[in-house]
Every structure is written in structure tokens, then in C-alpha cells.
Length: 226
Image (spheres, rainbow, N blue to C red):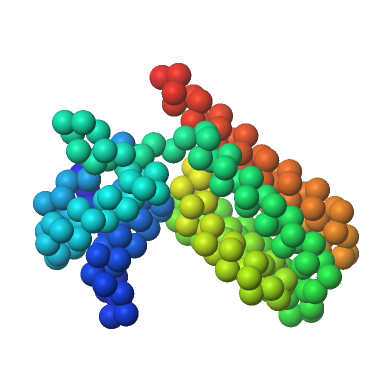
């Protein structure tokens, strides 16, 4: 097991919660990979804690479905499954449809400027070999849309979903052949929002998310066939 992440201490949280959040983030971001074993001693040594908060964190991660307990082997990171992908993206699709519709009504000139700038930033980083950087730029583009809704509850729900989405976003962005299509979808969303065309913005958003589902499902099925 290679450990290339660090614990981020928080004076307002119990140590067990800090360790749980650290491991959860590492799994969702792919720093701990599907199928990778979680060795309590190694994790405790790396994070500078005892084995007790590690063990408690692993139990909570198992309840979230991010970790599996394998008889006679111990804990390992759960594989990315088609069912989990569809569950997460169904929720995301509903929330993002609402998001673009509200943005069509409420976005102002500054919001449009930010949206164009975020799209340009995303385009600029596509040549990078850093998938994390590309994923962050993609998130930033969508964050501008969410900000334009001026709906704090919607933004909170989308932010809660963000980390669950991260594993699938990374898998999608590994497919460089999808980049031209992705750029065209981003531009289509911008044009629809700028034109206050709710129907078009909703249509493109649904296509945008369904293309991600189809691509990642194809990847998962290909892996399963090996």
C-alpha cells in the first residue's frame, strides 16, 4: 500500500473524525485505489495516530460502502461499481438540471464573465498530464453555475455530492478522446445560460451527464471482462 496523502488536523473535530475524513477523501480522490488493502499499522504510522481511530474510521467507511471487510484479508477499498455510479449521477442530474434552470434566470454579467473564464481555464489545462488539475478545473466551471443560482441549499447539496462524484469524474477525464465533446457541451451550456434558454440548458446538461455515465460504465464493464 502506497500512502501519498497527509492528515489535515482540525481543532474543532475529534481525532477519529479527522482520520475518517482524511481516509474518505483519499478514497474518493483515488489516492487510495479500489481493491487496495487498508493496513491499520501502516496507516497509523503514516498519519501519526494510534490504531484505534484508524479502526473506527474503517468501520464508518464500511457503512458508507467505500470499504469492504474481506474474511481472512481485512479491509480494502471498495471497487467502483456501475450501480453506485448510476445512483450518484441520477441525483447529480436532477440537481444540475435545477441548477442550470435557476442560473438561466439569475446569472448576471459578472457571473457570465466568470463562466467564460472558467471554461477557458478548463480548456487551457486539458493538455496537462495532471488529471487532478483537470478535474478541479471542471468542478470550477460547474461551481460558477451553482453560484449563479443564489440558492444556498442547492449549493450545499451539490457540494455534499461533489466528493462522491470525484471518483467517477476522474475515470471520465482519463478518456482524452472525450475532451472535444466535453468542450462542446460546456460551450453549449454557456450559450444556453447566456441566452436564458432553460429548455436548451436542461437538454445539454442531461446529455453532458449521460455521456459521462456511458463512458465510465463502458470502462467498468471492460474491466470486468478482463
